[in-house]
Structures are given as structure tokens and as C-alpha cells.
Length: 238
Image (cartoon, rainbow, N blue to C red; front, side):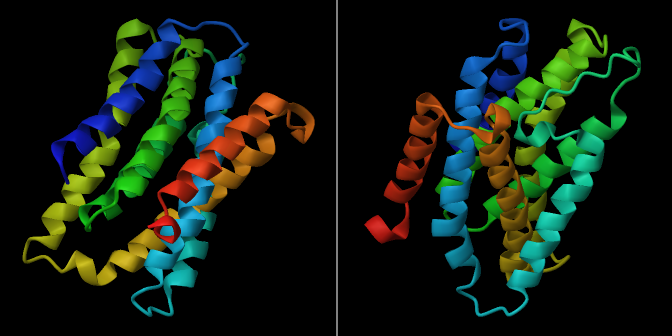
């Protein structure tokens, strides 16, 4: 993978997380628009690009791994409180406890997403991961500050999250080029897990990004723009 893609993944999550120091308060209208756009884009590239590619190898078990990824994301959210899709839950009853479950599940989530990037040209997937990590990192920073972690600790854990997707790429690339095993043989199944994760996250964002599940014109425009960009980059238009 080109170095600019690694930098994009790291910088997008870093920007999203560190911007929590610039935008305080509970009214994050722009974040909700970014969520709507990223959710639509994720859903678009998953349906138009990732799912067709995963089935090219005629592996009958890809569907099973998509289901595994979908269910795995549900399990992760038992510990992460939905930060993956921008939720910022505040635990006022326990403000001094470090949210270990949130941090571990979010890092595992990002690491897993980075693994398929070691296989071939995955520009659309890189953009999708980078987009949805912006609100996720912002939500993480909000939770850390709410839990009284302090500026230095908050910055450290945001940067730790930011390196997880690149780390997943480098780990899978090392496996595929070593004697441990040929990761390429299992690529479609790994991609199936990521597809399941993306399907869960994107549909959750689209259903929950508006109060009472209602769309206003700005959010609808953001959704349509996300779908349009995903469609423009799909094989159907090439």
C-alpha cells in the first residue's frame, strides 16, 4: 500500500479525535452531517464494490463470514457503546474510570478493518475507513474527556486508535509475505468479515443519524452525496 494511504488513515482518525478540543458542547450539527455522508458512502462501496469483489473467487463461505462480521460488530458494541458510528455516551455515574472496553473494542475494530488493505488496489476501502474513523475518533475523544482522562491521556489514546488500521495492514502484509501462511488464500473471507462490520455500521448510522429516525433536507443531501460518490467510483461507471 502506498505511504499516502497509510498517512490518510492515520491523519483522518487523528484529526477527528483531536478536533474534540476545538468543538465542545453537545450540539455537533456538522458531525451529524459527516456521519450521514460516511454512512451512505460506506453502504454504497460495500454494496457496489466490496461485496461483488468478495464473491469473485467463488468461495461459498463468503456469505457465512459476512454474517460473522455483522454479528461480531454487535458483540463489539456491547463494549464500545457504539462509538464506531459516532455515538458519544456519557457515563456520569463513573467519571474517573478509564473506559477499557471501549478502547479495546474500538482498536480491535480498526485493526480488523486494516487487514484487507494488504491485498491489491483497495482505494475505495481506504477512503471508507478514513471517512468513518473521523466521527468515531471524535466520539472517542469526547468519551475520554467526559471520563476525566485529561488532555495528555486523551491525545495518547486517540493516536493509539489512529495507528490501528495501518497496523492491521502491516500485520496482514507481513503474514502474506512470510512463511507463516498465504493470507491471499483467505482474503475473501477476511473481506467478508469487514463487509459484515461495514453493513452493520453503515445501516446503523443511516437509521440513527437523525432524531426520531427522520431525515431533514441537509442530511438527505449528505446521504445522496455519499451514495453518488460511491457510485462514481464503482466498476459500473468504468
